Length: 169
Image (cartoon, rainbow, N blue to C red):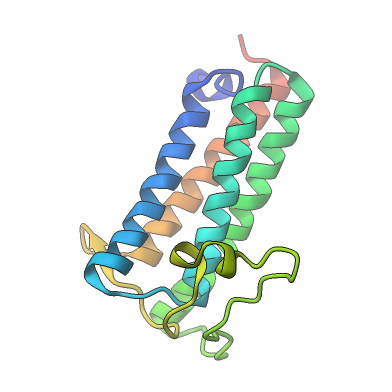
């Protein structure tokens, strides 16, 4: 447990989170470009959350030795993980039928100052309507796998922030 309580100033946790996010993005692109299962609006928002987590972790690598900037980065990672969890919850609702409000469109609602779908269409362009996510590994769907990732991120970032404030020896 102390390994996680004292991990925030170290390099490996930041790189691990980046590697996980890039692996998830790579898997999504594999399903999109090779298998031909195109992303829906919620899938694109998931990619945005993962990309934001990567960007905060890249900054975190450079600020990890300064206490308060590191804590702010950890708080941002918790907030981004909550956003990812909310999007994953919506995907799970589509998967299991409790989210039938039809809120999924064929266009991502990016702000005019950040049209990610125009800047990076391969990664952020909606190409399909929302439906159940495909099975990816061990009989788990993408949404179910993301649920595990969200739980892991929220736990890890929370423990790291707690450890940063309590200074475990």
